[in-house]
Length: 426
RNA sequence: GUGGGAAUAGCUCAACUGGCAGAGCAUCGGACUGUGGCUCCGACGGUUGCGGGUUCGAUUCCCGUUUCCCACCCCA
Image (cartoon, rainbow, N blue to C red; front, top):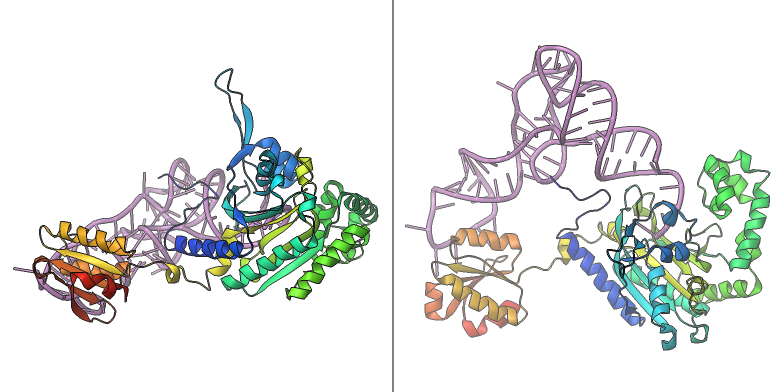
């Protein structure tokens, strides 16, 4: 038997109803903040991610699905392509390509699959879904303003609350600008030098490859050492410090709770200044339900104009996971309002006509088959979760009135054809 | 990429120390020819993940492998 490949999975009803419900709420909330949908390709030139996300990141160096798309003719050039491992690079590419800076401030959102070749785990798949939003524009559009950072964070708090996820925790940090980072990295390297030999093997590796990540270490024995290491907050230049303070001031003004975590670092190279994560307890080790931050230099790194931006990605699979206990998929699954049961030879046509009419009035109708005995029709109607069963037999067609029975109460009435719509809708 | 656990019917799970592969639910049919849910009867359903080994005999023990789960790494 051919099975879904490792790390991929089928989303089936009724679960898909929950996914649609979540995406509906997301679109509603985003609309209130004037975000508009963008859809970019699922694969891009490999160099986009290499330059955008960073060659040295785990994502680029070992997790991408990359292949050589070979040209088949002189006029058809071959190139290295990659399934998108995240959304921001593609969106910024589109922003540059279509010169969208001319429109002023852009607020995009995008919902779709991403691909990373990692070992599957709870809340982690090789094809997974992200709900992504970005605010990006030329500096003159206010894209750099702390108001945008705060707006996004407040929107996320609103979204999670609206979905009924109240026990989230917002971890906030500023990773500064590239200059701050360089100085901090240097200081960190120096501070690590004398102590790193007492740390775990991972930290010894990170101390060389990416000292920032040492701050992320969870090994208990390393914590006393990490506590004494320098913090990025001590290295923020004046503009970055002011920016970060302004973000916090607005969050306090709107009443969004957060806590500063100056050990929060993010895995993608393009992040600057504001970095954040929303975490949730019910997710096991993969407790980050969403993450994001500012990326003021990304557009330039991709050869575009100055276009500060800030965005986030929600792990939709994880969002659903933390929601499943609270919202049973069945509760958001649309059910037929009526099940039409044709009864006896020649009734399929009559039933189909009636179904067509009712459906044109936006009623949700399930349709049976004339060969079913009534008992079977009732069972099918009950199984489908229909509110009513509507019997279409010779007697009904002749009389022009139809037997309509409420499956929950057992109440049955005879309804003239003209009144069916209002009766079923009631 | 590393470590631990698991895999038996569509689903949830049994099967003693190695000895006929089972139950509940679900599905289909009947009791019951135009009135469901309940009940009763019956049927269908299996390469015990896959491959090899040990054995008279393997769901059971051993090796390999695949997938899933959990954790590490990393991230959403």
